[in-house]
Length: 306
Image (cartoon, rainbow, N blue to C red):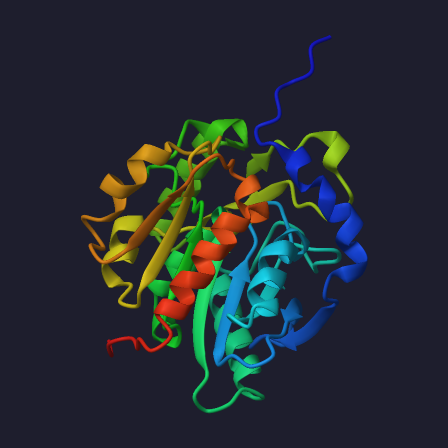
C-alpha cells in the first residue's frame, strides 16, 4: 500500500529530538481570565528587545527552539515562545478557545507579564511561523497592535483566500467548508453556540505524533489564529514588518508574496530564503541571520501612535 505524501518535510525537525535537554523549560503566566498559560524564555545577555515568537497550527513552542536560541545567544533579542491556549502538553481544552479574539488577549497578557520585570526602555516585537505568523499579523492589525514596535512573519499563513496559499495549504489542512459557512452565518447574527464545533483537521503523519500535537481546531480557534482580512491587517499594522518566505515552501506560492503584500503595506520587508522549505526555514541559519540583521536595523524605530 502506498504511503500518503507528507505535506511538509517533517524529517527536517528530527534534530530537535537531540536538543530537548537544551530547551528552555515552560514557565507559567496568568491570562486575564485567570487561566494558567505557558511560555519558554530565551534570555539575551544585554538586549532591550523582547520578541514574542508564536508557533504554527497543531504545534507548540518546542520546535521554535533553534530560532529562539540563535537570536538570544547573539544578544539580538530576548525571545519568548508561548504555547498558545488550546495547544501544548496539557491544555484545558485542546483545539478550542472561549472566543475568537482570545489568543490576541493572551498575547497582550504575556507582554504585560514580561513588562513587570523589563526595563522602562524595553521594546516589544511579535512574530510567528506559519499560522503563528498569521496570528502575529492579526495582533498587529488589531486593538493590541500598539503594544509592538515590530513584526517578524516567518512563512506566514495569511488566510485561505490569500493569493499565495496553495489549495488546502499544500495538503496540510482539511477544512469542513459546509460547517464553516453555516457557523459563520450564524455567528454573523450573533448566534455563537456552535462556535466550538470542530471544523479543521491537520494531516500530521502518525510517525510524528507525540501526544502534544493538536490535530483538530474549533471554528473559533481557526478564526482566531488568522487575520479576518490579511489586507486590512496589513493596512492597519503601522510598525515595521519583516516577512521571510521559503523558496521551496510546500504550502505557499513563494513568488506571490511580494505582489500580494506590498500594495497594502508598501514598507514591508519581504525576503526570499533560497533552498528552504516551510519547516526548514526554522532550521535555516541564513533565515536566522537575516532576522537578526533586520531586528538590529530597526532597533531605534518606534511605532506611530494610532
